[in-house]
Image (cartoon, rainbow, N blue to C red; front, top):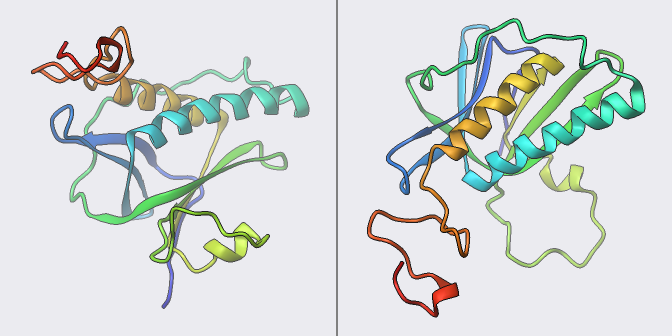
Length: 188
């Protein structure tokens, strides 16, 4: 079976966004450029972790390679626009990879599709992750540090715009409340 690599180096636009009401939202990463529009679905926790790890990556690039992140200013205004249409899901993301390319001072984000043969239990053998995921669709995006910071800020806003967390257990509150484990299963 053939696989596709959707590469945007750099994209015209790369954002995280959602479709649906809080509690029922579907999260997407969307890249646009060169007349192409690619949308991939992922989980809320993946968007949150991606933003967190991108911040860490930028800080590490600054510390290890002397990339001057403070001197670079974000010239673009915040991207608060909705996701572009048509919104056709190319694949569901299983693995996210991050890299800082020192030669070009850019961040590379790679979203790899969930494999059909993935199981809950990890393989016992030491297999190279590159070989395991080589036959899967992937979205690869190369961003400047400024574009990465803009992506991080939007991703944080998208994640925070959902249901508020319970002050006791941290699980999302539904409009009807939720069964809080800190209250022995009583509705809050």
